[in-house]
Length: 351
Image 1 (tube, rainbow, N blue to C red):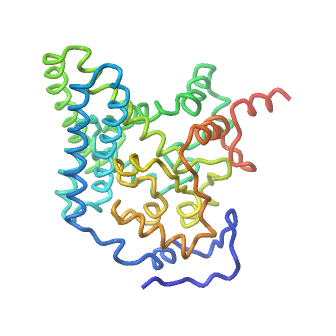
Image 2 (cartoon, rainbow, N blue to C red):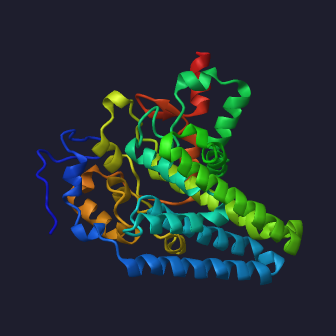
Image 3 (cartoon, rainbow, N blue to C red):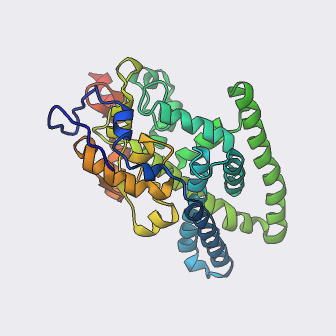
């Protein structure tokens, strides 16, 4: 049964009762939302494998003028592989850790993504969502740091926060996930294993693909679907936590309940994207608790709407205008207005 937490005043978005704790919010979510369902979990795996196979068959037989549509479908279906591995990384796919690790590693192999390094870094994001200096997912640069960059560094940052946002995930992937020396103790060995596994896989898979399909085959069957996958990775992560009115906080003012509940956005995508990507866009309950499997996110979200709706950021709809708004304005940290654009920063420095 859903438990309502008494609230002392009628809240509005932007205000937050800092006495509310994450455990208060968790108590209002039905217990069945946290229960793993083996049939649902493995059904997702087999349906996703089928969709990816359909995509690759389509790439093999489609005429050239249909290839862009099949690339988008295949890359989006591969993103579904990531979402299931995402559950594995949070241990919400299966009860046994080795099953989570096995499925997670297997599904991330075609994406050349080391499972353990992603799992560890992503869990750090959950612990420090929207915290300046700690969050590793789309944290805006502070003005002083941006100003200290050379012209080349500022140009690169403007591209990744602007019209080339969809490439940012590839930089995150390459820069952070293969360097096991950044980790300590047991985590270092886990990351080394995951990184070496995908390196060995790539060393076998790419020569075979090249030998059987040629250079164009590598581009057609792997590289372009991989870019589509990174488009969704970049887009989902950016939209989940970025809006002109969502602040980042310094550690001394950061509040876990506020950042997870009010600093995370529910964005509606086309139904075919939601299906292939297992409702990863229903992201607010996932930030309240990573123990909620992806197939229970909608149920948990409806509970949050019922009990905490006034604290939730207004829903958005995925569109070109939404991405233009984010990528044209949400660049540099501003303590008063959440963000300022790079252009506003330059104009301010000239005054």
